[in-house]
Length: 609
Ligand code: GCU
Image 1: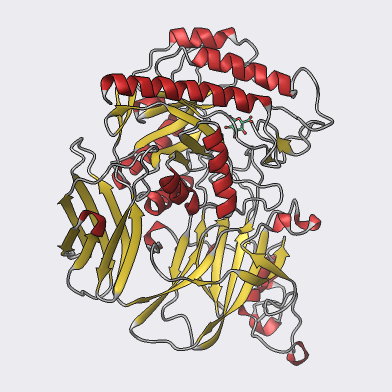
Image 2 (image 1 turned 120 degrees about the vertical axis):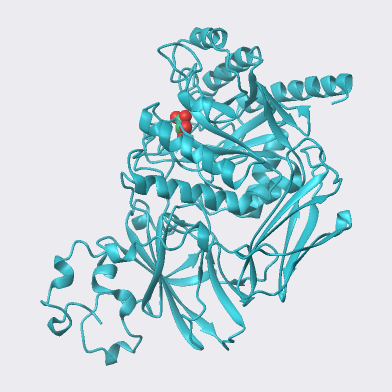
């Protein structure tokens, strides 16, 4: 049904005159409330070849490509501009920019479509579609019907297909749009590449009628280390109690859902505590009727007490490094090997901490961090200038934050939720981000909140009004690079007396170590090393600095860096973009962290904590 036929429209060209064509497809019906807890569930992967077509002018929504009937081209009786049932294919997951030179800077809508075969439908089963991430707006159509769309480029989203599927062949069509706009989160200007596409896994889940929609298990943060809080959200016809167990603790409990399907309990137990040195994980199992989910959970407590950070009651210093999710070959598509490599390099740096900047990374990252023993800062892309006055923008940011928290709040490695990065200190921003910090606490009272704030250069102090509403003050400072007078950092250190722990969430300098890189001055390896030496010397003297995550582990792709040394890359990596060639500053930081680790161990041996 193409709306260029006059009998189908008031006039033959209606679909070309309607600039509100996309409004009906922006209900954001896919959001944190439609998420499905998937740990331990069997997934039917929908990765692989999908039909694909870029669609710069949104002809697909205007002409309703999704409504075209499937038929042999020879049988078609009306003109059409794309047939979603055939044609060019791409692999999912992928970023289209990495697949063809002509798509490198493509920004707009792109159509992904594929058949979905359903052998038999049962009235006792439910079907859920889950997309690991799509950058940025993803509109879902099934058999010609619009189901809903999702905003947010880095969080998973689900949609129940029960009742919309038919036995035999169905057609799934997704319209993914990565256009940067002024009301998005992030907004249109970022210092990372604007990848687009279905770039994480797509899967179908089949469940019974009554399911466990969400499971949240955490040590009660009361300093006793002996109580485990369990929350289970049941969805569907009542099927009695939820059976919950942690076999490794010989813990078994029946939880009775309330009238809203929520079952909660606090159980007495004395788990071996999780920490980077002892990353102990326990299998947890929850079931109701025929539905069962499983997860692997570590039990630990993270606290901010005055200007101190404490992990399981012991003083903590975060020896960190910042990382993007970026690869010169695959773009934003990552995999287990890529993630493990990053943690191995962090281990070589003697890190116990990573800042996953500036958006939610693949869920494998926090699972592997749980297993290997790393602490994580996770963040939503409330980055630089955001439309802080816009309620729709706040709704988008808050939804992305809740989706991140619901996805990762069973992960012991995650200790900090960051609500943003380098935002201007205005009243509107303060309201916007204070509300986000409060949202984080509401969904997860066991973790700390933070944001990467800016130094008040006028007062030469660490001072940001948001710091009254977050637990950890993140500070991005680039003395020696963007800030010329390094002595100011010393003065700032003396002027500032924050009453909360400070984490230097970014510092660093570019270094081009290629054969055409400079031998001295800005962008040289020697200059980067010099900046790290001075930063380390200055920061180690500030006792309220409880962590550092320099910018950044690897060089990464970005459009806005185009000088002869950068050529479309940000070169602040301690390792080059090949993810193997270390720069001299890598070793400087590793040595500092090794010393810091020894100091911490000596202190622990002396004080027994
Ligand atoms: C900023 C920003 C980063 C950016 C970095 C840089 O602090 O937070 O996203 O890449 O500085 O300029 O390299």
